[in-house]
Structure formats: C-alpha cells, structure tokens
Image (cartoon, rainbow, N blue to C red):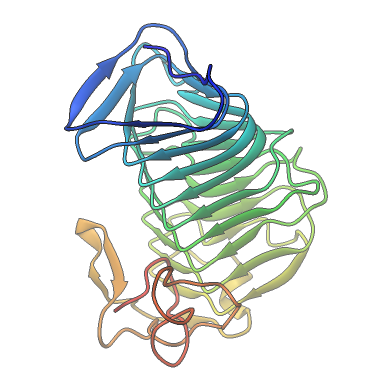
Length: 296
C-alpha cells in the first residue's frame, strides 16, 4: 500500500469499516494527506515516517512488529496533527523535525519512552492525551532550545518519569500545565532548561517524589496538588500547593476527573489554557480544575 502523495492537491484516505493493515516495510507519508478512520482500523508494521506536507492522522491504532523498543514512528518534517490515535505496545514516537500537535491520543504499553522530542523538532504541543506504561518514561525531551514545548491536560500513569527534560535539552522552557501523574516514580525530572512552567498539576503516589531537579530555573511552579507521594524538598512549599486526596472519580479505571467533593475542583490558576476544547469558555466552574481532566 502506497500512501505518499503523488498527485496535486490534498489526499484524503478513509475506510468504510474497521480492518487491519499489515506492512513489512517503512510506511512513508509525504505531501498533504489526511488519514481518517472509523473505530477498529489498526496498522501493524515496523515503522512509519512523516517527512513533509500537512498531515492529519485521526482515529487510527498503530502497533509495532519486530521493533524491540526502537521508534515506531518518526516525524522529520511537515506540519503534523495526530488526533485520537492509539500507539500500543510500540517503541517511541520520535519527533525529529517539523511541527507536531498531539491531541486526545493514547500511548499504551510503550516498550521505550512513549514520546521522544529530539533536536530539530519545531513546536510540539501535547494536549488531552494519556500515557501508560510500566517503568518507562512518558516523554523524553532532548531539545528545548527555542521551539514551543507544551504538555497540557494529559494523564501519566505507572511510568518511571512522566516527563524527563534531559541534560542536553538546552536553555529553553518546557510548559507542564494541568496534567495528572498517578503511580509514577517522578512526575517530572529536570536536568536542564530555564524558565520552566509547572502549574495546576495533580501528582498522586509518586514513589520518588513529585519533582526531580527542583534546582533548575522555573518561571512559575505553583497550584499543584500532591497526594501520597514521597517529599522532594521543594514542591510541597510552592505557592498555592494543596496536599490532599484528589478524589478521582475512578482512578483505577483511568477516570481522573476530580469528584464532586475533590479539592482539585475549581481551585486551579487561570493560565489562559483552554481545558474544555469545543465547549464555551476555557474551563467549567469558577476556575480551572487542577489535573489533566476537567470535571463536567
């Protein structure tokens, strides 16, 4: 199956029903293309790569064969939007170039870090997504020298480090706003960077502490909620911090919305982030909820 664009104009590839597509070579996308699927469409193969063009991937599932933890996918160029996509039992999604927006997507049972942001990647936005893997990192960031690095309204569960800003990252900031970290070793680990933002997050059951690398430079670190986590010597004294049970509706089932009596409800800082995309206003209630899921 060849999906790269070979004719003028934008390609739109859809599927009538669920099916499995198996491929043995690298699946390459080049040029302007939308791949939009109904539920049940699964691509299984060694790797896929996006090199150029305006690309939309929507409602697909990707699984890797024979990857051994190597990247299942790479973005080396273009303007890429990944929406409602599942990457399951695979190596990382490696961003090495281009501009990428990831929204409403799921990274499950990752064999390595689920998402790697390498030098060369332009603006990267991760919104409304979920990362779950046993003892792996959710996001490794190797470049924060200039382009936007924003992780918001997402959940991280059973990972080693939810987000790891690596030592070779450079001097730029990473914004981590309105996320939930549950049963991780560290919510975030900082080895480099300047002007970081870590606001409105919920961290529960962090076995090695909410934040590693508190000595790095933060423009703002406030209004986080901590629960049942090892003390890290810094986050518990930040402005606006709460130390209380977030009272998730059903955390064991992955429903991290704060319950009706949760102290996380309507107690976050208004950062200008839209935590209710598609709904009127940027949040529900008097203020944003803390954490990665706004209660409706």
